[in-house]
Image (cartoon, rainbow, N blue to C red):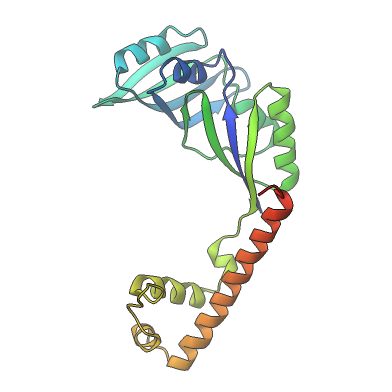
Length: 218
């Protein structure tokens, strides 16, 4: 399934964007958020050297209707907020794409990691444009779970090889040591590891070649 990395520019009038632009040293980490189609509610972790001023700006922002301070430690505060403008959630809702959280907003921008079918990613792009949210597609690649790429046995072997230093330079573990660690015959260990390495290398090359097709300037 395709996975996209996007940089989102939060439009003016949205509190998380206005706040992070007004306070460049502040970061807003959205932990959870929900919209009912009109307003929205969420949890945010805000870190800033001048925290009282930042919190005061949130409380007086036109789009924030309620702000509850749940916890504070050092230069960070955990808040629950309600807003009349959960603009970033509308494109996700209308395109049927789940937004992976948490994500962080700094100086008016945020990076999103989105995993969804190609047609939904395309619809998300259309919806972002529809709602006037500027965005840049940094990367699109095919996401494959490790268990889909390798068998359980291969995955266990590769992980153990890494942990034991088989791929270190200089090598900290021999093939014989690796086989003994897993209770395998050396020949079985060698063949299984080779098949796993073959799969990983071929997938890497396929992804690299696809990147060249998608982004020929690179």
